[in-house]
Length: 393
Length: 245
Image (cartoon, rainbow over all chains, first blue to last red; front, side, top):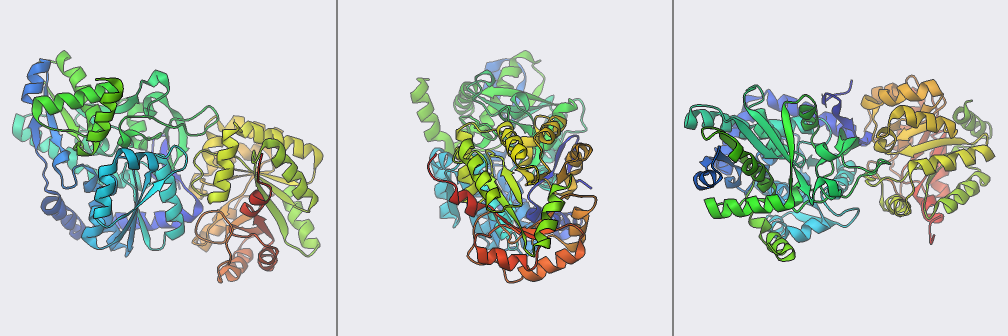
């Protein structure tokens, strides 16, 4: 029967040719999860190659300035390759190796997942091809250079809106054609089963570490954990660590672009309706006829019309609140973190930070907001300079 | 009415494979694709697959993708395709009509409403590219009461047990057997193992089977018809009837 459903969301809405590879993947994944040797190899790579654990950093000056809750960052930006994405690509590449696949393909938006996939391909001696929307190739040029340096072939996808969803379409076309020897490394907690579950498993190290570190450092859990949500991989990884801690409020932050009311945004849960895309039932930004809308966000990594199915379910049952942060608020939070704390965050993570900055002043001084700083912002500098020039900020 | 079953029976009686013709509706325009459908029926197409344009055609090759994008640019929707279907139905009471769509288009405004509209338009069966066996029950539950059937896709890597499950419980339809792993589009050569695969599938199920993906020439159609009950031509026809709107 149908697998991988989260409430009414999820499932396996793919072309028939992909059902066999998905079943093969599911079997390999389940077997690997039961194999202590797989787990041990995964953990040793996270430690010795990625550099985990990543620290918790207290934002002293920023929190004082805001005058309320203390903001604490989970520093996924300090991972090798500069974002949380590598946690997942190591897990999936280990699976690919186990399954005897010789080639990795990936879609990428901001390029962080593409870089993380190119990195593990080099590490394991696998071929790598990355699909990236042509618009993203331009606005995230430094990451394109990094992928090429690492030996990956980068395909600029010109079709449709030329962003992440179109890159994923092209990756699916590649996979359906080459599924015998190719492993599709999906970077976010979306797509058909078992990807949402598997990506959550590999990213849950973020939440587990954060929980333990919070207890060690503060003697208690945070009052709130905040993470940005495009497809939602860093968020689901963070939330996984606190799911059963009912007193920890969980907040996902979607990209509001120019404002949800303008229609130019990427807030699928807040502004979409139920649909099916890329293998899953999800909240989807679509026209009244059911075609997918071109999304917009200043942040390429959040510029996706769907969202991981488990997030939709967590929204429905009220466990996680999903807020919206617009471009201007994210840029302002980016500036704040640079100037108050000496940390240059990714534009994606700046959305989560902006939500924390909004909430902190309204919370008691002894409360703690944990923010997933999912990536570093080097890739965004040119993009941000252009934005500031355009809007004179 | 069993138009699809009848179409295959007629072809069989005439000692040929049934000709299933796919058209991207709305390309190069609604009017021209309607003319194309008429031409295909007059040339002997037994069943017409009406392709609904979708913004994210991830299972399609370049030809059908471009056609879909052009149709969308002109604002063609599922409602337009169904309106065209009902006009074709009025003129051709015997031709089998299959609505060929990505699932979101038929799902997102409510399956009941879709099934009512499809029934009113005279659609015989629905094919949803991204709706495998595991997920199809919710659609079948609204189609069956309205007398509409469903066309399952069978891939080169679909195990035989699954082929049988895919065919189970369906009537007035055929199995769409995909000839190659990959996306739609003409191919110079079909895989060598295709004939044996078609024979095996045909022996395992009661439904007629038709082969599609990559078939563009009469020679390929004839070759496939020796091992299947019909053949599907798509991209080659879309190309033929394309050109300037």
